[in-house]
Length: 147
Image 1: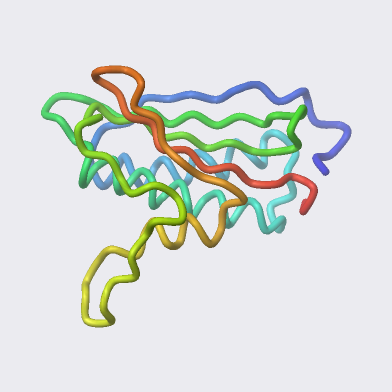
Image 2 (image 1 turned 60 degrees about the horizontal axis):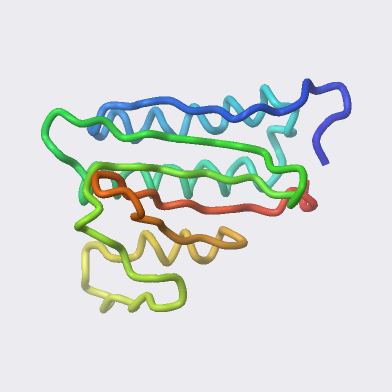
């Protein structure tokens, strides 16, 4: 579990530019925030959450980008569920990913299409919401008991 000396976790949210640089920064911010919250750097959840964040942010940039709009990264420790939640929101609710469990494996020669398979493999749970007419959020959760 998280170090007892760590301050109580609070949600972390930031807007990032819808660029490849913004996507790279998202991963670095998640790793830094987890360490600030007292999660050991060597904990598998740090690497897994970083990799999933990189994928969700890259997808927001590639598939959810709207001119002049940023994407939002939100990170939260949820003590009631014992989970870490990473969420990336973009402004293209008209471009929805497949639902969890409904992902197709691309052919070996395909250059893309494996990112959400990585998310599905590393996260305890993931999904998306598009309840707002201008925002879509793709989220992933990780069990904290593994720390």
